[in-house]
Length: 249
Picture 1 (spheres, rainbow, N blue to C red):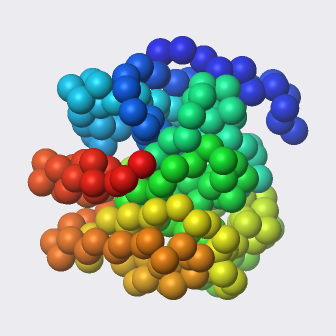
Picture 2 (cartoon, helix red, strand yellow; picture 1 turned 60 degrees about the vertical axis):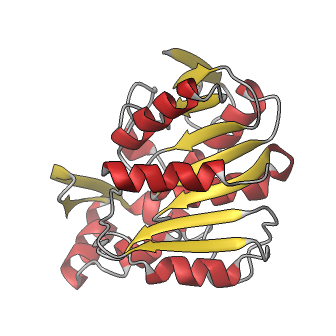
């Protein structure tokens, strides 16, 4: 594990933890999910695949995640939006395939808009686009909304975190400045989307909306009928790898 200095932040200098493997051909960058880290099942499986196939591969932890610096509750979409570009600018010489999982799918889309010259293609796993509004605020009860606005913090129950996800008022309000689904998305690279139809965290219909809004005609949406949000079973990871390998980049 290494650390990348990210000095240009409104929260002071930060360090992003990362791991990078060398290889030949187009590199792959794994962008994980909300409250996850680079030691997860999909990240580890892709690292093993990249090593076996001599492909360049980078995985990392966002601000406030895993081994990176920062307090998670200080994070906003504006701040996290800078993490992937920092990785691309400082660690990757050529164009990369961004593999974005859930929250990382939304951030990968942002990074492609911010660094179009650095992104060769997108492979998105249950992309949680516009999640602060569509998957959080819209789902919260009136009581939860009032508590969030009054106190600035609530804990959102989740099967993936026994203590619940800490959600701040700042995250919700800042997220509204980064929403994408209400207008065309000017992305013109190949996009592959993998989504489970048993996903109870990010509805697969959201990926249909995303595919309609993307400017590129080279979009494929692959649905797995029995897949849940994680898509971490061996056959699901194998399908993910197939999508990456089939890209002509």
